[in-house]
Length: 246
Image (cartoon, rainbow, N blue to C red; front, side, top):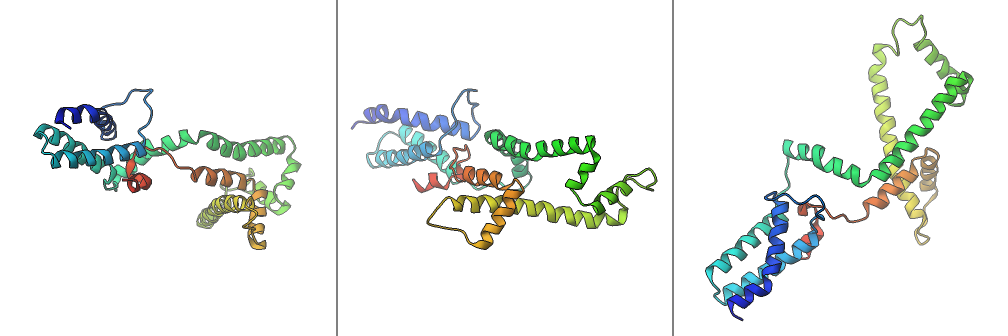
């Protein structure tokens, strides 16, 4: 095969790889309706370009052809095997790019979680406002009396005393972390419950019942099920599957 035929045959693959690298390295802006870069496709094109470079060297093809293939393979290697960023730049990218993108991608589950949190809260708040005696269906009489004393007209300060701030801070941390563990543990055990060959024990069932009673396990199940699906991200460094195929 002559160098001209070799170039004509594989130039399309090289152009596709170069276009993908331009987007990943921010050398060119992609169109608004352009599909995301596929990690598997870039890995395959990189592997093919390495094969073409080896053939071109073995056949002593012209220097301009070798230079093009060396540049392509070097850029692709940098993208696939690049070192992950750390420090303030990584934090900035997470807050400005990665986190908003993830929220938008999982918007349905975010809205579902927000609905499970806010709708019962608003309903209970409205019912207690219309019928104050319903507060006893949410908390006991002692806690209701404490709230009434804390926010009464005769209270020296609105809310709790300053010396109790650290105690309540620890309580809130423990309480919120407990909810997070119930969310994920309940979701995992609920998913396990759908596998007849792997039944859950009594201790796990107790955790599951507690999570379900708190309206949390369904959200955890959705998050775990969603998290088990592979995603097509633009950062190939987070796609070990793409590297394994090279």
